[in-house]
Image 1 (cartoon, rainbow, N blue to C red):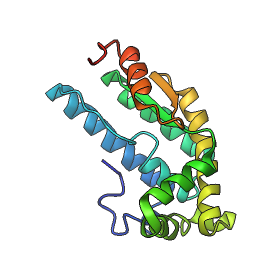
Image 2: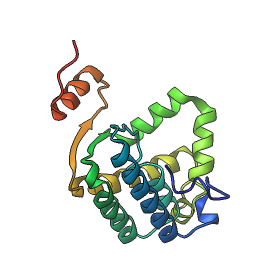
Image 3: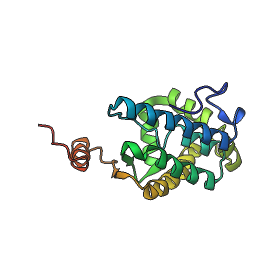
Length: 183
C-alpha cells in the first residue's frame, strides 16, 4: 500500500522523489484501493496505514507542514466513501513508549530504526542522533499526528494505551463500532 514500494530506494524515498511526488503517489494508490474495495465490498482492517508508512516518509523527507496537512486532508476525502473508522492508539509518555518498544524488540531492531530514520533529511536537519534522536523524532511525530487526528472529519476513537489494558480497549473499540462484546 505504501507509495514508496516501487521506488528504487523505497527505504530512503528522499533519494528518488520529492515530498509532493510521494504524496501524489500515495493519494493515487489510496484512490485505487478505495475503488477496488468498493467493488469487492470486503471490510478491510489496516494497521498503521493512515499515520504510518507514507506519512512517516513525508516527515523524514522534511516535507513542509502545509504539504503534510494537505496530504492527510486529501487522504481523508479519498477514503471517506468507505466510511472508515479510525483508531488512534497513543501513549502520553513518548520517551517511555519508545524505550519500552526498543527494549522489547531488542538492540538489532533499535539500531535498524535509528540507522534508517535518523538518516532522513528531517532528522539530519534537526541533528537527531542515537536513541535520544529517535525519541525526539517520535515526539515531533506525535505532536503532528495528534493535530492531524483531531482534524480528521471521520469516525474516530483515540485511546491512550500505556496501561496495556487490552480487554478494556477492546470493549471501547467494540462499543464505538456498535458491535457486541465478545464473551
